[in-house]
Image (tube, rainbow, N blue to C red; front, side):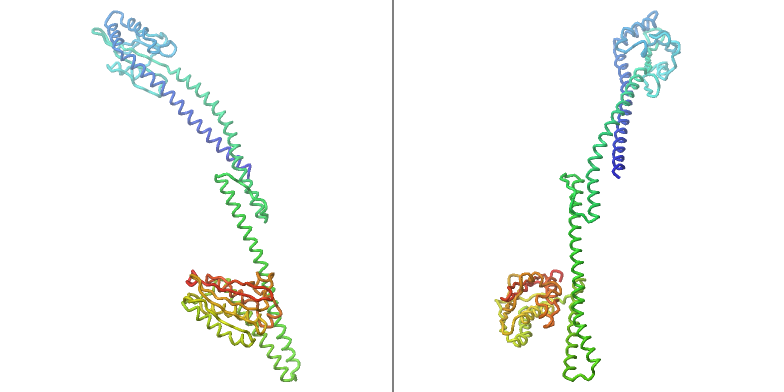
Length: 482
Protein backbone atom coordinates (compact mmCIF):
# COMPACT_ATOMS: atom_id res chain seq x y z
CA UNK A 1 0.00 0.00 0.00
CA UNK A 2 2.80 2.41 0.90
CA UNK A 3 4.57 1.99 -2.44
CA UNK A 4 1.32 2.50 -4.29
CA UNK A 5 0.59 5.70 -2.40
CA UNK A 6 4.14 6.92 -2.91
CA UNK A 7 3.87 6.23 -6.64
CA UNK A 8 0.50 7.94 -6.94
CA UNK A 9 1.63 11.08 -5.16
CA UNK A 10 4.88 11.31 -7.15
CA UNK A 11 3.06 10.67 -10.42
CA UNK A 12 0.40 13.27 -9.64
CA UNK A 13 3.00 15.92 -8.79
CA UNK A 14 5.07 15.00 -11.86
CA UNK A 15 2.08 15.27 -14.18
CA UNK A 16 0.97 18.55 -12.62
CA UNK A 17 4.38 20.21 -12.89
CA UNK A 18 4.97 18.94 -16.44
CA UNK A 19 1.50 20.03 -17.48
CA UNK A 20 1.99 23.46 -15.97
CA UNK A 21 5.41 23.77 -17.60
CA UNK A 22 4.03 22.71 -20.97
CA UNK A 23 1.13 25.13 -20.75
CA UNK A 24 3.44 27.95 -19.70
CA UNK A 25 5.84 27.08 -22.55
CA UNK A 26 3.01 27.07 -25.07
CA UNK A 27 1.74 30.44 -23.89
CA UNK A 28 5.30 31.79 -23.86
CA UNK A 29 5.99 30.69 -27.43
CA UNK A 30 2.65 32.03 -28.59
CA UNK A 31 3.32 35.28 -26.78
CA UNK A 32 6.76 35.67 -28.36
CA UNK A 33 5.32 34.95 -31.81
CA UNK A 34 2.53 37.47 -31.35
CA UNK A 35 4.90 40.04 -29.90
CA UNK A 36 7.29 39.79 -32.87
CA UNK A 37 4.47 40.13 -35.40
CA UNK A 38 2.87 43.05 -33.56
CA UNK A 39 6.24 44.68 -33.16
CA UNK A 40 6.86 44.43 -36.93
CA UNK A 41 3.60 46.11 -37.93
CA UNK A 42 3.86 48.75 -35.22
CA UNK A 43 7.40 49.53 -36.36
CA UNK A 44 6.29 49.88 -39.98
CA UNK A 45 3.42 52.15 -39.06
CA UNK A 46 5.65 54.37 -36.95
CA UNK A 47 8.33 54.68 -39.65
CA UNK A 48 5.98 55.26 -42.60
CA UNK A 49 3.85 57.69 -40.66
CA UNK A 50 6.80 60.08 -40.66
CA UNK A 51 5.90 63.11 -42.87
CA UNK A 52 9.54 63.54 -43.90
CA UNK A 53 9.81 60.00 -45.26
CA UNK A 54 6.45 60.25 -47.00
CA UNK A 55 7.45 63.52 -48.70
CA UNK A 56 10.79 62.10 -49.78
CA UNK A 57 9.14 59.04 -51.29
CA UNK A 58 6.53 61.09 -53.15
CA UNK A 59 9.21 63.45 -54.47
CA UNK A 60 11.31 60.52 -55.66
CA UNK A 61 8.28 58.89 -57.30
CA UNK A 62 7.69 62.07 -59.35
CA UNK A 63 11.24 62.30 -60.70
CA UNK A 64 13.33 60.37 -63.15
CA UNK A 65 14.56 56.86 -62.26
CA UNK A 66 11.93 56.82 -59.54
CA UNK A 67 12.39 53.17 -58.42
CA UNK A 68 16.14 53.60 -57.85
CA UNK A 69 15.74 56.90 -55.99
CA UNK A 70 12.95 55.46 -53.83
CA UNK A 71 15.18 52.46 -53.05
CA UNK A 72 17.96 54.83 -51.99
CA UNK A 73 15.62 56.61 -49.63
CA UNK A 74 14.52 53.26 -48.07
CA UNK A 75 18.16 52.28 -47.76
CA UNK A 76 18.82 55.46 -45.79
CA UNK A 77 16.00 54.45 -43.36
CA UNK A 78 17.05 50.77 -43.30
CA UNK A 79 17.97 50.98 -39.62
CA UNK A 80 14.57 52.29 -38.64
CA UNK A 81 12.87 49.66 -40.76
CA UNK A 82 15.02 46.85 -39.44
CA UNK A 83 16.15 45.92 -42.93
CA UNK A 84 18.74 43.17 -43.26
CA UNK A 85 19.53 41.38 -46.48
CA UNK A 86 18.88 37.96 -45.00
CA UNK A 87 15.43 38.17 -43.44
CA UNK A 88 13.78 41.56 -43.91
CA UNK A 89 13.99 43.39 -47.26
CA UNK A 90 12.37 46.24 -49.14
CA UNK A 91 11.14 46.30 -52.71
CA UNK A 92 9.75 48.85 -55.12
CA UNK A 93 6.83 47.44 -57.10
CA UNK A 94 4.84 48.65 -60.06
CA UNK A 95 1.71 50.28 -58.70
CA UNK A 96 -0.50 48.80 -61.41
CA UNK A 97 0.76 45.24 -61.87
CA UNK A 98 2.69 44.58 -58.66
CA UNK A 99 5.81 43.61 -60.62
CA UNK A 100 9.08 44.06 -58.77
CA UNK A 101 11.18 46.90 -60.13
CA UNK A 102 14.04 46.85 -57.63
CA UNK A 103 14.82 45.81 -54.07
CA UNK A 104 17.38 44.96 -51.42
CA UNK A 105 17.34 41.25 -52.30
CA UNK A 106 17.83 40.64 -56.01
CA UNK A 107 17.16 36.90 -55.76
CA UNK A 108 13.76 37.32 -54.17
CA UNK A 109 12.82 40.15 -56.55
CA UNK A 110 11.98 37.63 -59.24
CA UNK A 111 9.87 35.36 -57.00
CA UNK A 112 7.64 37.70 -55.02
CA UNK A 113 4.16 36.35 -54.50
CA UNK A 114 1.08 38.44 -55.02
CA UNK A 115 0.04 38.81 -51.36
CA UNK A 116 -3.24 40.33 -50.07
CA UNK A 117 -1.37 43.44 -48.93
CA UNK A 118 0.10 43.95 -52.43
CA UNK A 119 -3.37 43.63 -53.92
CA UNK A 120 -4.64 46.16 -51.38
CA UNK A 121 -1.87 48.58 -52.37
CA UNK A 122 -2.63 48.10 -56.09
CA UNK A 123 -6.19 49.16 -55.31
CA UNK A 124 -4.81 52.33 -53.77
CA UNK A 125 -4.98 51.54 -50.02
CA UNK A 126 -2.28 50.83 -47.51
CA UNK A 127 -1.72 47.12 -46.92
CA UNK A 128 -1.18 46.39 -43.24
CA UNK A 129 -3.11 43.15 -43.07
CA UNK A 130 -1.83 40.66 -40.47
CA UNK A 131 -1.84 36.95 -41.34
CA UNK A 132 -0.48 35.05 -38.31
CA UNK A 133 -0.71 31.70 -40.12
CA UNK A 134 1.50 32.83 -43.03
CA UNK A 135 5.25 32.18 -43.04
CA UNK A 136 5.96 35.84 -43.79
CA UNK A 137 5.05 39.37 -42.72
CA UNK A 138 4.63 42.18 -45.22
CA UNK A 139 3.55 45.77 -45.64
CA UNK A 140 2.58 47.35 -48.98
CA UNK A 141 2.14 51.13 -49.30
CA UNK A 142 1.13 52.92 -52.53
CA UNK A 143 3.27 56.02 -53.33
CA UNK A 144 2.36 58.50 -56.07
CA UNK A 145 4.15 61.66 -56.89
CA UNK A 146 2.61 64.88 -58.17
CA UNK A 147 2.90 63.50 -61.73
CA UNK A 148 3.83 60.13 -63.06
CA UNK A 149 2.91 56.50 -62.27
CA UNK A 150 2.13 54.96 -58.88
CA UNK A 151 4.67 52.80 -57.12
CA UNK A 152 4.39 50.42 -54.15
CA UNK A 153 6.83 50.36 -51.29
CA UNK A 154 6.88 46.77 -50.14
CA UNK A 155 8.54 45.49 -46.92
CA UNK A 156 8.81 41.71 -46.59
CA UNK A 157 9.97 39.74 -43.52
CA UNK A 158 10.49 35.98 -43.84
CA UNK A 159 9.75 35.30 -40.11
CA UNK A 160 13.04 33.44 -39.87
CA UNK A 161 13.91 35.48 -36.78
CA UNK A 162 10.78 34.51 -34.91
CA UNK A 163 11.14 30.93 -36.10
CA UNK A 164 14.71 30.75 -34.83
CA UNK A 165 13.67 32.41 -31.60
CA UNK A 166 10.82 29.94 -31.18
CA UNK A 167 13.20 27.04 -31.78
CA UNK A 168 15.59 28.36 -29.15
CA UNK A 169 12.70 28.93 -26.78
CA UNK A 170 11.39 25.42 -27.43
CA UNK A 171 14.79 23.98 -26.55
CA UNK A 172 14.86 26.00 -23.34
CA UNK A 173 11.37 24.75 -22.52
CA UNK A 174 12.44 21.14 -23.08
CA UNK A 175 15.38 21.60 -20.73
CA UNK A 176 13.06 23.27 -18.23
CA UNK A 177 10.67 20.35 -18.48
CA UNK A 178 13.51 17.96 -17.70
CA UNK A 179 14.60 20.02 -14.70
CA UNK A 180 10.97 20.34 -13.60
CA UNK A 181 10.56 16.56 -13.85
CA UNK A 182 13.55 16.00 -11.58
CA UNK A 183 12.38 18.63 -9.12
CA UNK A 184 8.85 17.25 -9.15
CA UNK A 185 10.12 13.76 -8.39
CA UNK A 186 12.16 15.06 -5.44
CA UNK A 187 9.25 17.14 -4.17
CA UNK A 188 6.94 14.19 -4.69
CA UNK A 189 9.20 11.94 -2.62
CA UNK A 190 9.37 14.50 0.20
CA UNK A 191 5.66 15.20 0.11
CA UNK A 192 4.79 11.52 -0.10
CA UNK A 193 7.04 10.78 2.85
CA UNK A 194 5.50 13.63 4.85
CA UNK A 195 1.99 12.34 4.11
CA UNK A 196 2.52 8.60 4.07
CA UNK A 197 4.68 8.29 7.21
CA UNK A 198 1.93 9.40 9.65
CA UNK A 199 -0.61 7.36 7.70
CA UNK A 200 1.67 4.33 7.99
CA UNK A 201 1.99 4.94 11.72
CA UNK A 202 -1.80 5.17 11.98
CA UNK A 203 -2.15 1.94 10.01
CA UNK A 204 0.24 0.10 12.32
CA UNK A 205 -1.50 1.55 15.35
CA UNK A 206 -4.86 0.43 13.95
CA UNK A 207 -3.47 -3.08 13.46
CA UNK A 208 -2.26 -3.12 17.06
CA UNK A 209 -5.62 -1.87 18.29
CA UNK A 210 -7.36 -4.54 16.20
CA UNK A 211 -5.23 -7.15 17.98
CA UNK A 212 -6.15 -5.68 21.37
CA UNK A 213 -2.92 -3.78 22.05
CA UNK A 214 -3.64 -0.22 23.19
CA UNK A 215 -0.22 0.44 24.72
CA UNK A 216 1.42 2.30 21.82
CA UNK A 217 -0.52 5.16 20.23
CA UNK A 218 0.74 7.43 17.44
CA UNK A 219 1.77 10.90 18.55
CA UNK A 220 1.25 13.95 16.37
CA UNK A 221 1.57 17.57 17.47
CA UNK A 222 0.89 19.10 14.07
CA UNK A 223 -2.23 21.21 13.56
CA UNK A 224 -3.00 19.97 10.04
CA UNK A 225 -5.52 17.34 8.98
CA UNK A 226 -3.08 14.49 9.68
CA UNK A 227 -2.56 15.78 13.22
CA UNK A 228 -6.31 16.05 13.76
CA UNK A 229 -6.74 12.52 12.37
CA UNK A 230 -4.05 11.16 14.70
CA UNK A 231 -5.58 12.80 17.76
CA UNK A 232 -9.04 11.64 16.75
CA UNK A 233 -7.69 8.11 16.32
CA UNK A 234 -6.12 8.23 19.78
CA UNK A 235 -9.40 9.42 21.27
CA UNK A 236 -11.24 6.66 19.44
CA UNK A 237 -8.70 4.07 20.62
CA UNK A 238 -9.02 5.33 24.19
CA UNK A 239 -12.80 5.14 24.00
CA UNK A 240 -12.59 1.67 22.47
CA UNK A 241 -10.23 0.56 25.23
CA UNK A 242 -12.63 1.90 27.84
CA UNK A 243 -15.54 0.14 26.13
CA UNK A 244 -13.61 -3.12 26.01
CA UNK A 245 -12.75 -2.80 29.71
CA UNK A 246 -16.40 -2.12 30.40
CA UNK A 247 -17.39 -5.15 28.33
CA UNK A 248 -14.92 -7.29 30.26
CA UNK A 249 -16.30 -6.02 33.54
CA UNK A 250 -19.84 -6.59 32.27
CA UNK A 251 -18.94 -10.09 31.22
CA UNK A 252 -17.39 -10.76 34.61
CA UNK A 253 -20.47 -9.35 36.32
CA UNK A 254 -22.69 -11.46 34.08
CA UNK A 255 -20.82 -14.60 35.02
CA UNK A 256 -20.96 -13.71 38.68
CA UNK A 257 -24.64 -12.86 38.30
CA UNK A 258 -25.42 -16.22 36.70
CA UNK A 259 -23.39 -17.99 39.37
CA UNK A 260 -25.21 -16.08 42.12
CA UNK A 261 -28.62 -16.75 40.60
CA UNK A 262 -27.79 -20.42 40.25
CA UNK A 263 -26.59 -20.56 43.85
CA UNK A 264 -29.56 -18.63 45.22
CA UNK A 265 -32.05 -20.82 43.40
CA UNK A 266 -30.23 -24.07 44.07
CA UNK A 267 -30.45 -23.65 47.86
CA UNK A 268 -34.27 -23.40 48.11
CA UNK A 269 -34.74 -26.02 45.38
CA UNK A 270 -32.52 -28.42 47.30
CA UNK A 271 -34.46 -27.77 50.49
CA UNK A 272 -37.82 -28.21 48.76
CA UNK A 273 -36.71 -31.44 47.11
CA UNK A 274 -35.25 -32.85 50.33
CA UNK A 275 -38.35 -32.18 52.41
CA UNK A 276 -40.70 -33.25 49.60
CA UNK A 277 -38.82 -36.57 49.14
CA UNK A 278 -38.98 -37.18 52.87
CA UNK A 279 -42.75 -36.62 52.85
CA UNK A 280 -43.12 -38.82 49.78
CA UNK A 281 -40.98 -41.68 51.10
CA UNK A 282 -42.49 -41.70 54.61
CA UNK A 283 -46.22 -41.01 54.57
CA UNK A 284 -46.44 -42.11 58.21
CA UNK A 285 -44.55 -39.08 59.52
CA UNK A 286 -46.04 -37.49 62.61
CA UNK A 287 -48.45 -34.70 61.72
CA UNK A 288 -46.43 -32.06 63.53
CA UNK A 289 -43.25 -33.00 61.67
CA UNK A 290 -45.08 -33.17 58.34
CA UNK A 291 -46.56 -29.75 59.02
CA UNK A 292 -43.10 -28.33 59.74
CA UNK A 293 -41.77 -29.85 56.52
CA UNK A 294 -44.62 -28.32 54.51
CA UNK A 295 -44.01 -24.96 56.18
CA UNK A 296 -40.35 -25.11 55.08
CA UNK A 297 -41.41 -26.00 51.53
CA UNK A 298 -43.82 -23.07 51.38
CA UNK A 299 -41.24 -20.65 52.80
CA UNK A 300 -38.58 -21.77 50.32
CA UNK A 301 -41.12 -21.46 47.47
CA UNK A 302 -41.92 -17.91 48.61
CA UNK A 303 -38.20 -17.17 48.71
CA UNK A 304 -37.77 -18.46 45.13
CA UNK A 305 -40.74 -16.37 44.03
CA UNK A 306 -39.21 -13.29 45.65
CA UNK A 307 -35.87 -13.90 43.89
CA UNK A 308 -37.58 -14.32 40.52
CA UNK A 309 -39.69 -11.17 41.01
CA UNK A 310 -36.63 -9.14 41.96
CA UNK A 311 -34.73 -10.47 38.95
CA UNK A 312 -37.60 -9.55 36.65
CA UNK A 313 -37.68 -6.06 38.14
CA UNK A 314 -33.95 -5.57 37.57
CA UNK A 315 -34.13 -6.97 34.05
CA UNK A 316 -36.86 -4.44 33.23
CA UNK A 317 -34.68 -1.65 34.61
CA UNK A 318 -31.73 -2.87 32.51
CA UNK A 319 -33.87 -3.07 29.37
CA UNK A 320 -35.46 0.34 30.00
CA UNK A 321 -38.95 -1.17 29.94
CA UNK A 322 -40.01 -0.01 33.40
CA UNK A 323 -42.69 2.66 33.30
CA UNK A 324 -43.13 4.94 36.29
CA UNK A 325 -46.54 6.20 37.34
CA UNK A 326 -45.51 9.82 37.87
CA UNK A 327 -47.76 11.91 40.08
CA UNK A 328 -47.53 14.78 42.54
CA UNK A 329 -47.84 13.62 46.15
CA UNK A 330 -46.88 14.52 49.72
CA UNK A 331 -43.51 13.02 50.52
CA UNK A 332 -44.12 13.64 54.21
CA UNK A 333 -47.23 11.44 54.11
CA UNK A 334 -45.35 8.65 52.36
CA UNK A 335 -42.69 8.71 55.08
CA UNK A 336 -45.44 8.54 57.73
CA UNK A 337 -47.12 5.62 55.92
CA UNK A 338 -43.86 3.66 55.75
CA UNK A 339 -43.19 4.37 59.40
CA UNK A 340 -46.65 3.12 60.34
CA UNK A 341 -46.31 0.02 58.12
CA UNK A 342 -43.01 -1.05 59.71
CA UNK A 343 -43.70 0.01 63.29
CA UNK A 344 -45.24 -3.33 64.31
CA UNK A 345 -42.27 -5.28 62.95
CA UNK A 346 -39.85 -2.98 64.78
CA UNK A 347 -41.82 -3.41 68.02
CA UNK A 348 -41.76 -7.18 67.51
CA UNK A 349 -37.98 -6.96 67.78
CA UNK A 350 -38.30 -4.60 70.75
CA UNK A 351 -36.65 -1.75 68.81
CA UNK A 352 -36.97 1.87 69.83
CA UNK A 353 -38.35 3.26 66.55
CA UNK A 354 -38.88 7.03 66.15
CA UNK A 355 -39.88 9.46 63.39
CA UNK A 356 -38.91 13.13 63.14
CA UNK A 357 -39.45 15.85 60.52
CA UNK A 358 -37.10 18.80 60.03
CA UNK A 359 -39.29 21.67 58.91
CA UNK A 360 -41.95 21.72 56.20
CA UNK A 361 -41.57 19.28 53.30
CA UNK A 362 -42.89 20.21 49.81
CA UNK A 363 -44.92 17.98 47.56
CA UNK A 364 -42.83 16.09 45.01
CA UNK A 365 -43.32 14.43 41.65
CA UNK A 366 -42.53 10.75 41.22
CA UNK A 367 -43.81 7.20 41.38
CA UNK A 368 -45.19 7.08 44.91
CA UNK A 369 -45.33 3.29 45.13
CA UNK A 370 -41.73 2.89 43.96
CA UNK A 371 -40.40 5.56 46.33
CA UNK A 372 -42.26 3.98 49.25
CA UNK A 373 -40.75 0.64 48.19
CA UNK A 374 -37.28 2.21 48.62
CA UNK A 375 -38.22 3.63 52.04
CA UNK A 376 -39.55 0.26 53.19
CA UNK A 377 -36.33 -1.41 52.08
CA UNK A 378 -34.28 1.12 54.05
CA UNK A 379 -36.30 0.58 57.24
CA UNK A 380 -36.55 -3.21 56.82
CA UNK A 381 -32.78 -3.54 56.55
CA UNK A 382 -32.35 -1.45 59.69
CA UNK A 383 -34.80 -3.69 61.56
CA UNK A 384 -33.24 -6.92 60.32
CA UNK A 385 -29.63 -5.99 60.98
CA UNK A 386 -30.12 -4.37 64.36
CA UNK A 387 -30.07 -6.73 67.36
CA UNK A 388 -33.31 -6.89 69.33
CA UNK A 389 -33.78 -3.91 71.61
CA UNK A 390 -31.88 -1.50 69.34
CA UNK A 391 -32.61 2.06 68.29
CA UNK A 392 -33.85 3.10 64.85
CA UNK A 393 -34.45 6.72 63.96
CA UNK A 394 -36.25 7.87 60.81
CA UNK A 395 -35.73 11.55 59.85
CA UNK A 396 -37.05 13.50 56.84
CA UNK A 397 -36.79 17.05 55.59
CA UNK A 398 -36.23 19.36 52.63
CA UNK A 399 -33.12 21.03 51.32
CA UNK A 400 -33.61 23.58 48.55
CA UNK A 401 -35.27 21.86 45.60
CA UNK A 402 -34.76 18.37 47.06
CA UNK A 403 -36.31 16.24 49.81
CA UNK A 404 -34.48 13.67 51.91
CA UNK A 405 -35.06 10.85 54.32
CA UNK A 406 -32.48 9.24 56.61
CA UNK A 407 -32.75 5.94 58.50
CA UNK A 408 -30.16 5.60 61.26
CA UNK A 409 -29.67 2.51 63.46
CA UNK A 410 -27.20 1.22 66.03
CA UNK A 411 -27.04 -2.25 64.52
CA UNK A 412 -24.16 -4.51 63.53
CA UNK A 413 -22.90 -2.09 60.87
CA UNK A 414 -21.02 -2.89 57.69
CA UNK A 415 -17.28 -3.56 57.42
CA UNK A 416 -15.37 -0.92 55.43
CA UNK A 417 -14.29 -3.51 52.85
CA UNK A 418 -17.94 -4.38 52.11
CA UNK A 419 -19.36 -0.88 52.15
CA UNK A 420 -18.68 -0.09 48.47
CA UNK A 421 -20.38 -3.32 47.34
CA UNK A 422 -23.67 -3.10 49.24
CA UNK A 423 -25.52 -1.94 46.10
CA UNK A 424 -24.14 -4.81 43.99
CA UNK A 425 -26.60 -7.49 43.03
CA UNK A 426 -26.69 -10.55 45.31
CA UNK A 427 -24.06 -8.99 47.56
CA UNK A 428 -24.65 -9.65 51.25
CA UNK A 429 -22.39 -8.82 54.14
CA UNK A 430 -23.78 -11.48 56.48
CA UNK A 431 -24.88 -14.22 54.08
CA UNK A 432 -26.08 -16.65 56.72
CA UNK A 433 -28.28 -14.10 58.48
CA UNK A 434 -29.58 -12.74 55.17
CA UNK A 435 -30.85 -16.13 54.14
CA UNK A 436 -32.41 -16.69 57.56
CA UNK A 437 -34.28 -13.40 57.22
CA UNK A 438 -35.36 -14.16 53.67
CA UNK A 439 -33.11 -11.62 51.98
CA UNK A 440 -32.14 -12.05 48.33
CA UNK A 441 -29.29 -9.51 48.12
CA UNK A 442 -31.26 -7.58 45.46
CA UNK A 443 -33.21 -5.11 47.59
CA UNK A 444 -30.63 -2.32 47.65
CA UNK A 445 -29.84 -2.85 43.95
CA UNK A 446 -33.50 -2.32 43.07
CA UNK A 447 -33.71 0.66 45.44
CA UNK A 448 -30.74 2.36 43.80
CA UNK A 449 -32.19 1.80 40.29
CA UNK A 450 -35.47 3.39 41.36
CA UNK A 451 -33.75 6.37 42.98
CA UNK A 452 -31.37 6.98 40.05
CA UNK A 453 -34.23 6.91 37.57
CA UNK A 454 -35.94 9.58 39.66
CA UNK A 455 -32.83 11.75 39.37
CA UNK A 456 -31.96 11.25 43.02
CA UNK A 457 -29.23 9.62 45.09
CA UNK A 458 -28.97 7.04 47.85
CA UNK A 459 -25.90 6.76 50.09
CA UNK A 460 -24.78 4.60 53.03
CA UNK A 461 -22.47 5.44 55.90
CA UNK A 462 -21.61 2.71 58.37
CA UNK A 463 -19.10 1.53 60.98
CA UNK A 464 -18.91 -2.09 61.98
CA UNK A 465 -20.48 -2.61 65.39
CA UNK A 466 -21.64 1.02 65.59
CA UNK A 467 -24.58 1.12 63.21
CA UNK A 468 -25.57 2.29 59.74
CA UNK A 469 -27.03 5.46 58.25
CA UNK A 470 -28.72 5.34 54.83
CA UNK A 471 -29.92 8.54 53.17
CA UNK A 472 -32.31 9.04 50.27
CA UNK A 473 -32.38 12.34 48.31
CA UNK A 474 -34.92 13.12 45.59
CA UNK A 475 -35.52 16.21 43.44
CA UNK A 476 -38.87 17.75 44.21
CA UNK A 477 -39.51 18.30 40.49
CA UNK A 478 -39.25 14.60 39.74
CA UNK A 479 -37.23 12.84 37.02
CA UNK A 480 -36.23 14.94 33.99
CA UNK A 481 -37.84 12.58 31.48
CA UNK A 482 -41.21 12.69 33.25
